[in-house]
Image 1 (cartoon, rainbow, N blue to C red):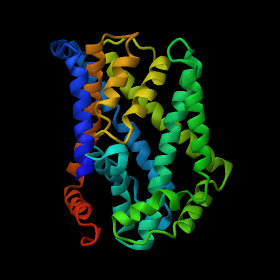
Image 2: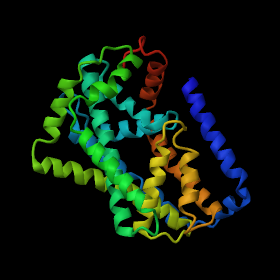
Image 3: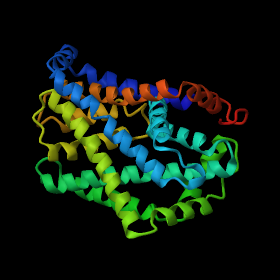
Image 4: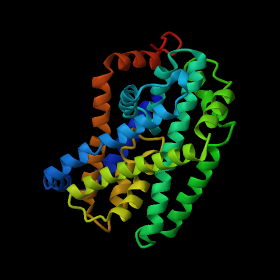
Length: 318
């Protein structure tokens, strides 16, 4: 609870600092000038990357815990609801609780799967941003941005094949749920062997992760265009990647504050500060809508998981 309140306080403080320097009425006017049809299209574009992520999760999962694509879609939407309350996408751990069905062995495989999925999700974002920075040229972002994104991409690619990674990253999660989750190596190696079993499988994983983030960036770019921000797509993909990465920093709530400040700063060549801040508010809407879908589709699971997170040693996942 202290961590949640701290993240909420940091987000609130950053938003106050941002909006003190802005004309709030101008932000409202920027939202009022938005193109309604294009804004509706941008919100509908949320569905394709969610559906593609559900396909990828089902494809990645071991047979013992593999969800159907519809179930995977519901789990991803439910995780979006928890991501609104937890920093740095920790809400995605909810998928592991339900996929593992409360069994230690199943939970180990499910946690390894979630780590693998989110790792490749981040790699897809970094790859899109790196390619966009290279193709758009140094006049939109400094050349150092390409080095940073490229370095993170290379490091992440190496880690996704590192056999000891789950034990380092996920063992503390086991303590959260009051379970011994130390023997991750077997589950992780099995996952690596299945996912990297052939060149076609690797190509499907790489291309799928990149396409998913291209769809996400297209959706955010469409929101920007709905606000009449004259942002070319390549430049937009580069700028928006950095803004999304800023929102993943672990000391804010759902990225609120850091992402908004990054948008105002990075979009300054294309839009005034109130319009960029309006895009930040629309960004919150794109986080809330999938969360609403998850709550609507899985209300009982949401309640059960909430009890589990409050009392991890007393409640078994369904």
